[in-house]
Length: 454
Image 1 (cartoon, one colour):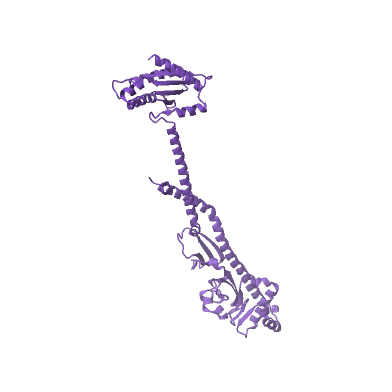
Image 2: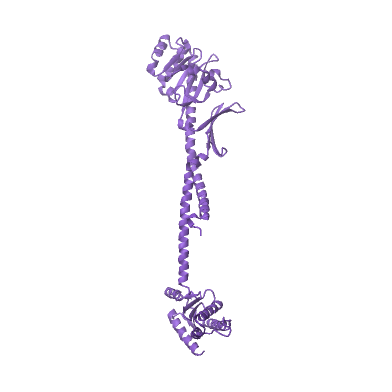
């Protein structure tokens, strides 16, 4: 017999139940999971948008000032600004023989810092790169300023507006690839560049590095592609991604020629919550086992109760059940009682042995089960004494059934062919003013009368 603790059916049911429950949990909580991922992505693109607006604004400001001669600072003012840049937490690198135009641009940036001190530093590390004299103006120190003019910066990471096509610069914004910052190689950044034009030529660009949180890029691949409209698409997704098509994708247009996409694979959610499924399996399995044990216990108790109420020899009810019924005292008013007693059973025992006497008793019980209805109460009181309680049965019907029982018992073949089993009966109808015990006593009186007439 298989133990209920290792029952395959219980395992399958608990698995099925756990799958359904786990799917419900996924449906109810996946939105929370996605909202956290969306939030990280939104923070990133908002920072890029902010940097884009700042760089565009500053580059336009510089261009505007270059076109206004009265806006130029005199040589003494410019020299004072350049000499005191370190006090303003700015750094300059490159050619010391700067053009007057470059010095004036430094003066313009000083004015911005003076009028709007938080603007330049708000988006991230920023710098102005002058192509005419290879000069670099930064908001923080750098170890090697030449990196900003290098092939890696201009051709690989695509941060230099001087070497970009008119198509890429049509909205005056250039967005680089994601790369290690030239200010701090431990950080990953996207550079936002806005060209500065003078007389139709690019003379420099204003740039801002947007720092990308390292935990956001952790275990992610970065893919670059250009669509048929020459629009650059940066796609972020997990390095190890299963069920690639089963993912949630969000994207943001940064400029006319750049879109950033983030593919969120749903398997990550399952990877982080797989233990919940097995917890459901474990709990549901224990729950089912516990309930089966309770059900089996109830069944066993019911069977034991039935056995305690059943006569072992005849398989009909015994005196114990009769006592319980009498205690309930909920019998219908219209019922009849038939008291039954086997005739000459003692002689049969003495003549043929007790095993034949037992067969005679079983013979009488068999006839009772044949004659009466399933909802009638049949009892063996003891020895060869029997009792029938007929629910909702008038006296004439009870008498008819009593006669039928006698005939069936007498005429039904017995194991000893020349031996006929007979019974005596006492039949009483219980009226509404009579208790069941009173009806039983009257039935016994009628039984003895019938027995004397045999």
